Image 1 (tube, rainbow over the protein chains, first blue to last red):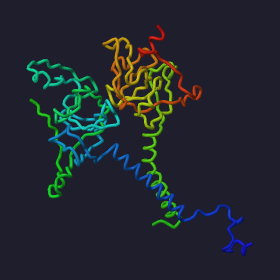
Image 2 (image 1 turned 60 degrees about the vertical axis):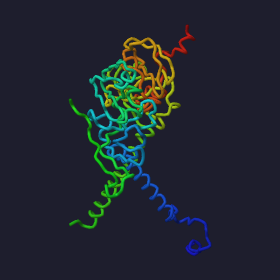
Image 3 (image 1 turned 120 degrees about the vertical axis):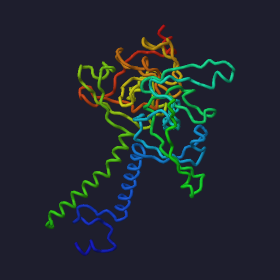
Image 4 (image 1 turned 45 degrees about the horizontal axis):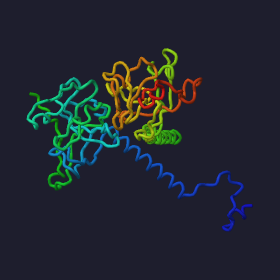
Length: 193
Length: 176
């Protein structure tokens, strides 16, 4: 029996062995795949609950954020509007298309009275500003570049539940490495008058 | 410090707990994006959920691709973050999708409402319910998951029964 099973030309499984041993490569592949899965999920967990670095695009936040290659440091502990204040820059799901995320500045919190569009009346020489009170659990967001921004002036208040995080700093990779790739803190711009 | 056997035991249990910890993010991701179990409290969906007082139902929450408009259809039951308080989660039934014209009910200020793009009109099956008639159409970004079946209590295991009223203007004309 032992002679047959040790023969290099015998491909039949050894009947004395209960389970055929897994090949080295198969074990290696399985371990690799499980670690890739675990690492990916751990990164996803951190991205959705703690911190995320992501490129922000578009003109709507100009002078604060560049149109491209500007990476924002987002703290996800502020999600669901948890502890955000007037003047904070936030990342939120776009209410009219939740597949997109927008980056805006909060300019009204629940209870605040908002002039819906300050530029509206004056351009036509008459002042017909409309006012509204921000309802409970919502906020009013606008881009810093008011003339080129789709924000609460078009889709009205957004629920705090759509807020995904607060932007605390940004890296503009258009800048040189000497300026630490354009690193700067993004600060609260709210001035109380 | 340790004899050979207990050192081996310690090493084994450390390895076990490390393996356990590394699987937690995987479970989290699965529960966040594929499926999860949701607990339903309160009376707003009576008699579909919680037909008895002080009971709570557990439902299977399907979360895969939940923000796609084709996954959110009329008469689906969804769990969504409350627009008034994002920490709270409501269970409501979709009574209108984007583009539908809705005949609203009492607390709503106007008689009709057109549901905007990527928004839903949600109502509870119980008439005493805080729903879209109070807070208006909600963005699909607030949807947490779709309830597909009741899993506990086992006596009502299975598909979620239909409920609620018809409030789409285009369909109401069929009844007139």
